[in-house]
Length: 48
Image (cartoon, rainbow, N blue to C red; front, side):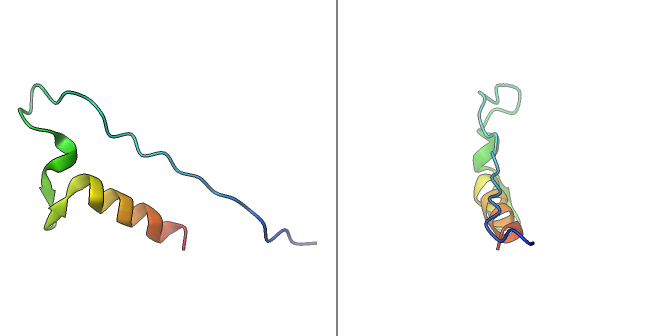
């Protein structure tokens, strides 16, 4: 019997002071969008 009610979760760790970098790593532009937004979209795509 196959269980179709499988739940998958993900945690994106995006914190820290970024003191050596001088700016928030989550907000740097990566492929035209903020890095955190890019990671969220890519993660959501994995679960669709």
